[in-house]
Image (cartoon, rainbow over all chains, first blue to last red; front, top):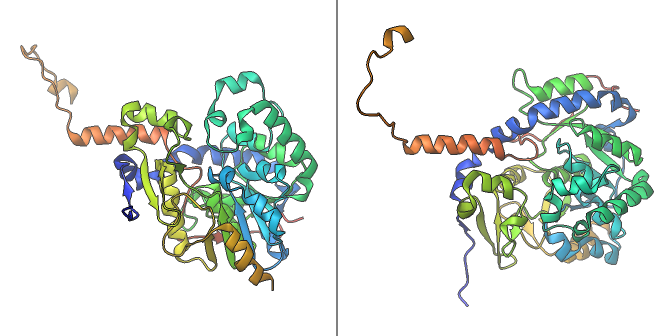
Length: 351
Length: 60
């Protein structure tokens, strides 16, 4: 068999858009984020500042494991390994991975949410107002190659509501001031311990910075999210929980090569933009040499990958990508199986 | 200005403007901006800004 070298293929239009993703994200979310922050202000006194976490000792030892919600999670089952090994370091989960964690017997030490979106994000924590009609209107979750539990959406929703109501009070939530009010309501209703932060919407050092204005108004720290909640979990583990070795799981930033385009997050937007026949111009394939397989990514995740690689360049902690798939690899990232991290790295850190 | 430049006859041939590659690219990027974007911003080379403008604000 000829050995393939890792390279990227296709996605010409995605590469063309890469330099504009920051502006596109601002255009898409800045207004909504600021409106959300204003609407959430009455709740700020009901939680603590993110800076309060600096005083807490979370997880044993110097390691953390991030569990995000990429498609590798249902294949690799990192929660099962955490239970099997009795890992006692910090577990940091994206809000989209909370239900997976709880269903598999892992209560995250810290959950993180940052997306300002209104309707969809509530589904990760259980939507008390979910109806069949809503499901018919939005097939987003049904299409995703993520948690299989979402295939039967109403049942999954009931299960998440119940799990979070039962375990919520044990979970710290790093909650963005710009989160949708419906999510904030759900977080407080479920009894999670809230630690507020502002996401950096723009450079806080610039004049008229929206981020600086928010921070001045509410006094909470501002945090660089790196474009998405998975990267933010990594940053929280290293910069807030101050762990020296951080493992990533479920941080694919991509789709498995046999995933139909229909099952990707921006499918409808992509078809709208370039047409069904030209989708390959928006999706880029990467060969991951650590697992010997191809994966493909869309413009948003291509940008997330670039953001992460840039942030990893000067991070003060070590990064171990234990996703065992996906497209996040390169300088400053050690790609190893999660079992190896738990058995060797984490064990040594606790010794 | 419009009053100065307006035409006073109907040309026989209809003039069709050519769509250049730059126009098409610009249009694509404009359309892309309406549809795509990340979940939240990324700010180059910054991590956490801990400065509390009011150190006690928000703390329980």
